[in-house]
Length: 134
Image (cartoon, rainbow, N blue to C red):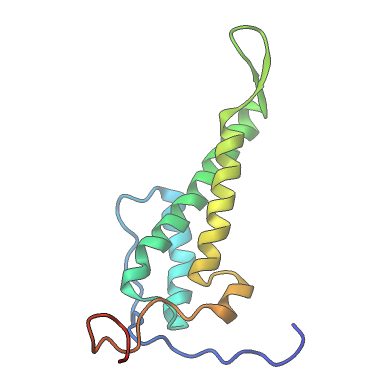
């Protein structure tokens, strides 16, 4: 990256310790949680109310792996009952989850480009009920 590096600052309201992965997440999603959440907590860029976004990201990563496993095992196409060669539904689900994971990773500050932009979602001052200084 050319130019001056952005100053990374800790997020007010950031988590101090990495929470455990939710029990309902599939195996691959839990593995992704263990990979990204400790780093986000260490950089002080993850607040408690943002955990559902990280859950969604991890679930998308798990779905990508599941779809890819089916595609590798059974191929990109199948023969329909009418004898036509058709694309497997997993190819569409794979594409959708790749896009979702990409967007969610950027939103969470997981990608290199988004880390410099992401300030997290915790507010610095919750003194008034509307979040606006008057």
